[in-house]
Length: 85
Image (cartoon, rainbow, N blue to C red; front, side):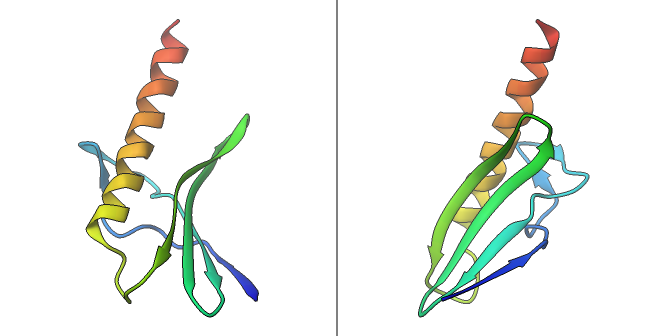
């Protein structure tokens, strides 16, 4: 098994109606199958894993990308609310 880390932005530039300045990168794991881990490492307190999945086609599904984008938007909203309190 080899692990190849590539700081590659997700397809698309929007998450939850917000324009992303820097889309989250993904970790690509190459074995006999392809796996992806989409994460955010922009905050001092943690690295947030937005979505991890096995790729079954060459193209990342809209479902997987949409889920990662929604989770990023949710994380952004949660952090904004915490700063307000």
